[in-house]
Image 1: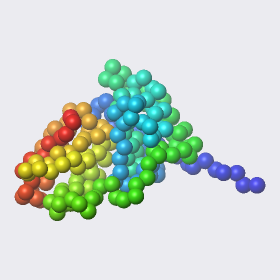
Image 2 (image 1 turned 135 degrees about the vertical axis):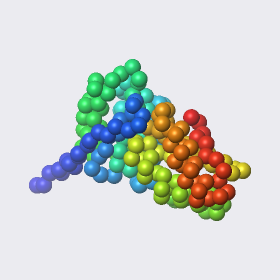
Image 3 (image 1 turned 90 degrees about the vertical axis):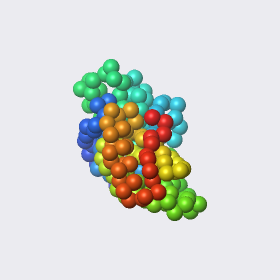
Image 4 (image 1 turned 180 degrees about the vertical axis):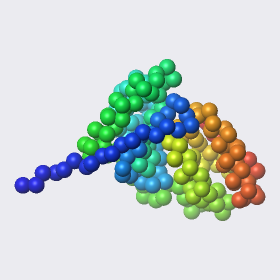
Length: 193
């Protein structure tokens, strides 16, 4: 009789501009591409058993899950050298178990809405195509919030939340790109930061 084989899991760690965050990258997709889940506290983890388990570590202050990675933000009082191997091993063991990382499904594309104006559709398209991949590379995500009177508001999640360089990224990178590509955009602001 054949026995089920555990999925081979390779997990490596990547630093990012936020010194309190570390990105744990897997060799396969954890959630659908373009979808992300941000857990700012243990109470918000109802749909992610992995995030819930990670908050059992006292040093864990935020968990972010997207594509093939988990970004963990730690307490400033703790050094990564003290906890990174423990957290990496826990995530690896969890992934090897084959359990779902996030219990969520979507009936439609969560990014695009047919009711959006043409400008909002263009903004979301630029964010998705040009900006999301770069922000994900740093262990975070950017999510469209609103567009009114020339001002685009976005949510910064994962490693971007509380990152010292997020303001520079927002103004020099994202705002510069959007205002250059869409004349109707005059400014970009981070919501909830």
